[in-house]
Every structure is written in C-alpha cells, then in structure tokens.
Image (cartoon, rainbow, N blue to C red; front, side, top):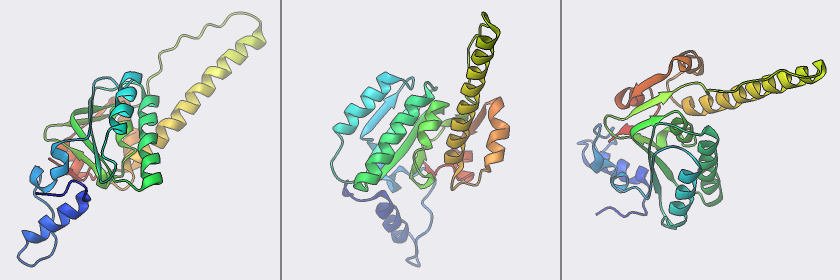
Length: 216
C-alpha cells in the first residue's frame, strides 16, 4: 500500500521503473489511476460556481487537510468569479512557498473559465484531468452600462475610469494566460488568438499540448 505522505512523483517514478525491463523510468500508462494513488481520494473537493461560498469551503477543507505530504485538490466547475479563483490560487502559492507542500490539481468533468484560472496556480507537472474532462479557456467578460450625464469634464472622467478598468482587466487576464501555458507546448499568442471564441480542450488534447501532466 502506498504511503499517503509520499510525493506523487516518487510513486510514479518507482512504479515506472518496476514495469520497465531495463529498470529505467518510462511514462505511466495514460489514464492509469493505479500510477497516481493519491488522486483516487482528493483531500479537497470543490464543485459548482467559483464564488465566495466555494472559497469558504476551500479554506475549511484546507484547514482539515493532512499536515504532511501532498494535498490533492479536485474541482469541477462551469466557471464563476475569476478574482475568487485567483484568491484560491494565492492560497495554494502561499502554502507551497511557506511549507514546501506539494499541491496537486485534479480537474473533473468540466474546468471552465474561472476553473482554468485556478488551475493556472499549479505548475503543469502538478495538473491532472479525469477522462472525458474538458477545459474551456476564454476572455474575461464585462457587462456594464456606462451613463454619460452631467458636466463634460465629469463625463470624460467616467469614460476614462471605464477604459482604465478594461485595460487593467486585460492585463490581469494576460498574466493568467501566461501562467496557464507556462511549461506547456501551447504558445501564449495561440491562447490569446483562440480565447475570444471560447477554446474547449479535451483531456487527452490537454495532455498532448502539455497543459496537464496526465489523464486518469
């Protein structure tokens, strides 16, 4: 039985060597959950809209997670608030930097929009998807009505404020896009080009493109 405190990389490496006649590590079979025993029972399970309720659940489950060893975080979502996704991602970063903990991402069924933003907080070699799961990457969306009324200088200020909001949102979006593709075989410019039309990526394709380590 695998020691739950062991790094998933250790389990994968030893299993690969055991199955190789030369004793050299080789890639694990695609979709073989037996190669990644930690993923079978995630420590943190998130589902539904990415919102403040999910963040509260995430924090509660994180507080009750094991104090040692890797932590597996599973999520299934059709999207939600990208700033909440960034907030959860920051919790992941801080825990890793403060304690050196290994945190693993497991996307299940659907990892859309803000779910992909959360995934970007994990390096590509710490990301996994279950079979049949799809990623969906797209541009941020703004729904806002700007009312221009009053003194002309005030109208200019209102329009400039909206423009600055859009420009800042684009900058944050591009930071997230760069984190999503970092270490993968997907070019940043390709993601920027395809995001406006909602880019759906099946699990196996995500693995081929290096956006995730494996499919289970």
